[in-house]
Amino acid sequence: MARVSVDDGDLVVDVEGMDKLWALKSRLTIPLANVRGATADPGIVREGKGIRAPGTYVPGVIVAGTFHDDGERVFWDVHDSAKAVVIQLADEHYARLVIEVADPSSTVDMIEGALGGRH
Amino acid sequence: MGRPRGFDEDEVVRAAVALFARRSYDGTSVDDLVTHLGVHRGSLYKTFGSKRGLYLRALRRHIDHDVAALAQTIAAGGSAEEVRRVLAAGHDLGLLFLAMVERAPADAEVAAETTRALGLLDDATESEQVTNQAIGLLLRGRTTAVQQRTLEGVG
Image 1: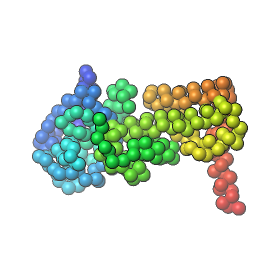
Image 2: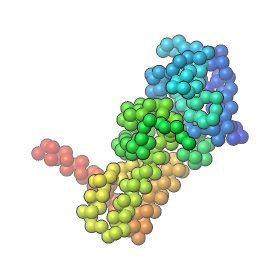
Image 3: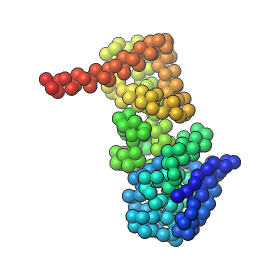
Image 4: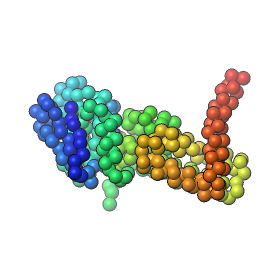
């Protein structure tokens, strides 16, 4: 589970609890200028996650860590696929974050609302 | 300077207009987009940023093409038959109507676009009242057309 907030022009993603061990990184801070959008996407877990880099993957239970998909680096931390949110980035270490949040639709609204009409 | 994406962006946006018009915004999942638009998930995110990013592109395209074409026909003094032909050639105004009901109240950027669309129609009709009547007729027409098809199917 991750907690997402907007703080002083940054998007802050805190990966909570046990996931820290698996996903290896507990906080990601991304300037909003490098955030391209957020989408609730419960279907993404069923798709291939690419080749695993350090992190952990227990089939059907946990997807956490860094994966490489089609030349892109993707951060994953999802247990419950129904609550998966995809955050697309630009000019960042990760091309995209796939995280689990408590309330996907309000998290998506908050992030999209913070983009200031860049779509 | 963008890299080749391996798909026709405008074609994808055009297909998204039809899909969102049929299933609404909330009713369209990323799975639906991947299946119906024939674009990989990663490419969708890379190109449009998010589902909402694609939706806004689709809505703008719908207004720039379908609504603008209708406005032009009205402004040129087109007959009811001509207006019907323009609607039949495009996607009718399904996405605009859905956006007005579903997303505009919750999304300021969508509201700005639907307001722009109404402005185009107002400029064409030169009367808000005529625009309102036209919208009412188009909405009513969507219902009666389905009813007629059903009745014909039974008969």
